[in-house]
Amino acid sequence: MSQIKIAVVIGSLRKDSLNRKLALALAHLAPSDVTFEHVQIDDLPLYDQDQDGNQAASVKRLKTSIASAQGVLFVTPEYNRSIPGVLKNALDNASRPYGQSAWAGKPAGVIGVSIGPISTAVAQQHLRTILAYLDMPTMGQPEAFIQNKDGLFDDKGHVGAQSKEFLQGWVEKFVSWVKLHSN
Ligand SMILES: Cc1cc2nc3c(=O)[nH]c(=O)nc-3n(C[C@H](O)[C@H](O)[C@H](O)COP(=O)(O)O)c2cc1C
Image (cartoon, rainbow, N blue to C red):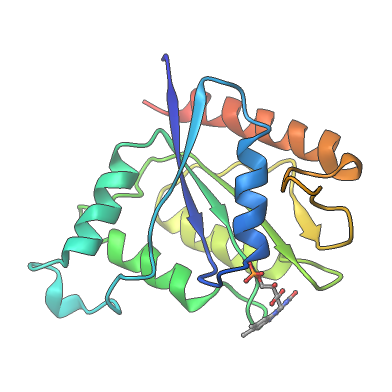
């Protein structure tokens, strides 16, 4: 496989999202044969099963983006000890109609940053349950529960010196995971 495309789904719509910053910083650590494409989820309708036969253009766009990627990277905050509703809505929208899920078989990685001391650990476990049902082979190790601290990002928005070795290793392992599990 020559060029690898990873679809990046960010579980926060916030303009100054730490998770978006993390996703952008991770892309700088990736090998040159990998591109990260952020998918848009802020214009998806609230999932409604009555619309399965008439999916909105934004849902079709999301499904096309996922279908054309070799893997999916979820970068998400934790909201009230679970995943944000916007992320669940994206997962539900692109999982239907039944039998036409965009997610099935796509290798996935899960990571997230939070201000809390246990980071996004609980949200990630909830997300893993959903991804298992969606039949996405999801990298188990290394886990990455990032707590936001001064120096996590440098002044260019890249990963700061203290976290660089760990996150570089995480990205390399994830890219290998995608290569191993993509068709
Ligand atoms: C509705 C809401 C619920 C939150 N719940 C949690 C939580 O359960 N665990 C946690 O560590 N942080 C929680 N936080 C704080 C987030 O970690 C923090 O707002 C973080 O910056 C959100 O990610 P973002 O910067 O990518 O938007 C919550 C924030 C909001 C707005």
